[in-house]
Every structure is written in structure tokens, then in C-alpha cells.
Image 1 (cartoon, rainbow, N blue to C red):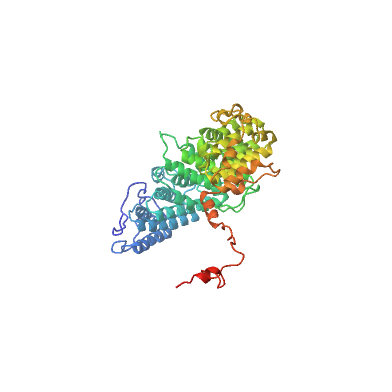
Image 2 (spheres, rainbow, N blue to C red; image 1 turned 90 degrees about the horizontal axis):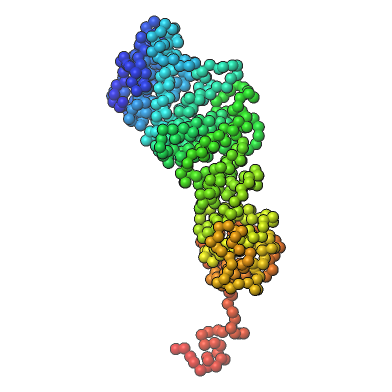
Length: 557
């Protein structure tokens, strides 16, 4: 419908969910529901201002008299317009109209019967009006759900805020009968429509999801978001051979936006206002929120996620997911599968596995063997290098580890150090020395005077099992070779094995994030050596003082 079209209210039939004519259904009077008589229309009054005034007259007419109810058709028709500004004005009109009707209790309460059954029946005029208007409200909500996919972000944002307004009003004025006194009611069907629109499989909804985050600050919205998202994600693969990447990205952004409070206690920040909160409601207990949070993530992670999404999950696993789960040990399967993939995914899975091993008694027999397998030349160049070496330092900090295992890690790192960049060497060399400090049995690697020649090194770098690598029979000749490194700081760090290692360990935390650029900038800022004096008495002039022989024999002309 365009701005130049004239709004009218002829006898209508159901068209695209806009409703049907109720001119034969009695409203507030004996004359029934008739077309509103309002002058002007939008014809000759084009533009957003004209549409606003015309829609305002329609809303006022409907709210003033039930006999003008058919004007709702004209408001809903503008929602189908192709003009962005007209759609926005229609959304504002629907927000005002149905918000008032909800607050006044003029929508049918209970299981919604079909229009044909009610309008052709012998029930009272008031019941017929409320059922009919409830169907119009449902058509409006469905159209607003469709507008969440509109090309214009302004329309999407307005549709979202209007739907959330209806969620709040429906919660305060429920459209269903409570089953018992103080029963907790929430507009689940309407809210699932909102969440389903946010989790679109066709396009990226990140901007709209960022707007939705402000509603997640409310405890009830957060709880029902987890439930609705859990159901939507669980049905993601129903009837689809392959789920689009856009859906997984939208789902991850929504799920990662849910953050639970860390302190136990009763939750009371509700979006839907209640006169009194009941302790019998699940929504007021953090324990129930944790259960919903856990079910939401488990249903999401049971799918075969794209590698990009899997990495995003692993990045936040240790800090944003595991601390809020009712049973963190249920993440064992996902983390072990990710750890077996290899590469950067395995590096990211280490953080979650570390928490499960140290805090939840996870038993992982081949953990150190797989950690040893992650040490390859690429480990110095990946994005998550700092996190990997921080966790590796934690895993190898126990003094109860066997000497052969620690020697295998030290030897593997020393061998890789031969081709590592300087910024990595400044961190790896203290790392190796810390291993030798913690495990005195491995110090034999630093001094083996009767060891084999380099071409007969017993260490096998291709062996995947550290127990079979024979590292303890070898020596750290690589560190001696690095003492001849072109970078002076690397050479100095490698020379640490020439003296007895100090008892306190060297903290590698400041060295984890060092980059080549920082090293270069640091070298540029170094001050050179001070000038060395060559004469006891400073020279004055180009040929010296007047009494000097050079000044007596030569002159400048």
C-alpha cells in the first residue's frame, strides 16, 4: 500500500493474515462493527506526516468505539507497505493500539478459538469482539516477526522493541487463564516468535542481537531466552541436510550474550512486573537458571559446528561457560573431541580441559602425550601462542611428573627453538630453564661430557610418545648453539645454562605477549656507548692550539 492510496474499509475477507470482516458481528451496539467514517485519508496528504495523522485517527477511532473496529484492517494493511516510513508509522500505531487494548483487557483470554466458530455462533457480542480483536493482535505480532527480516535496520529495531513491549504487557495482562492461584504466567508463544526471528538462518542478525542484549539484563527475559533458544537450536537440523553458517553465528552470539550472576541468591530484576514474587517460581532461583543455561549449551554443542564457531566457543569456554554450568563435567565429551582435532582448536581446548582436570577430577590418560604432539614449529606463530604456553607451564608445574616426560618436553622445545623467531625464543628459553629448575633429575641434559656426537643424538623427534623419545639420554646442545644467535638478548638467555641455575624461577608471564615489533622498538630506543676520550687535553680548532707544532707549520687560507 502506497502513501497516495486512500485508506478505506470495504467488506473484507481474510487476506494474508490481516483478518476478516466483522461487520456482521455485534460490537458495542446494535449496529455491529462498521467502517469508521473519517475524512481525508492519505490521498492528497502523502508523506510520513500524512500517514501518521491518518493512522492516529484510526487508532483513536478504534479505541473510542468498538463500532469502529474494522479500522484495524487499514492499520494492518499499512504494515504490508513497501515504504519504510509508512511501515514505521504503522508499527507505532499498532504499538499504541494493541498496547491500550491489552492494558484495558479487551482481548480474549484463554485458548483462542477460530474466528468462524465464534462469529457464527450464538455467543455474546463482547466475546465475539474480543476473539476477533485477539486474532487481529495475533496477525499484527506475526507481521512484526516478519519485519525482523526487513532490509532496513530501523524497521527491524522498531519491530523488536514493539514485540518486547507486547511481551511485557502480555506478562502483566496474561492472555491465558492461571491454573492455580499465584501461577507464574509468561507469553511463551510470543517470546518464541522473537527469539526465532533473531536466530535467522538466512542473514546475519548481529546488529539486532546487540540491541537485544539490553533485555538480557532482566532475569526473567534471560531465563526464557535460554529456554526458547534451547528449543530452537535443538530443532536446527530438522528437515535440513545442512544448516547455514548464518544460523550458527546468530545462535552463538545470542548464547554468548547470556551471562549469569556468580553470587547465589534470589533473582528479582524482572522485565515483566509482578506485584509479588513467589518462591515457588523457577524463574526466581539461580539454580534453575544454571540448569537452563547448561541445557542450552549442551543442545548447541551436540551439533557438528563449523570450525570457526567451534573456536569461538572454546575461547569463552573457561570463563563464560564452565563457571555457570550445573554440571561442568558434562563438557568433557565436547572438549576431548576438540582436543583431538589438532592445531589451533586443540590449543584452545586446553583451557577448558585444565579446569576440568584440576577442579573436577577429570581423568585423561593420554593428555600429556597429546600435549606433547601439539609442539611443532607452527606453535610459535599461531594466534593463541601466549595462552598455550601459559597453560603448558601450568600443566608441567607439578613436581610429581616423571623425569622422562619433562625431559621430552624440554628437548622438543629446544629442538624447535633452532628455527623459532627471536620473540618466541625470549619466552621459550626461560621456559626450558624453569623445567630444569623444577626437576633436578633433568639437569643431566645440561652437562653430559661423555655424551654422543650430534649426528648420533639418541633423541627421536618423530616419536609421538614422549616415553619412547629417549630425551633423557640426550643433551640440550641446542641451547649451546643458540648462544651464537644473532640477537644479543637471545644469546644472553641461552647462556643461562653456563652457570648454576638460580633457585627462584623466572616468570614468563611478561614474555608471553612479546612481539617482533616490540623487540625492534626496544632496540631502537637503546642508547649507544658513550664517546671514548682520545686525548687528555681536548683539541681546540681544526689544527689544534697555537703553540702546537701543527699550527705553527700549517695555516688555513
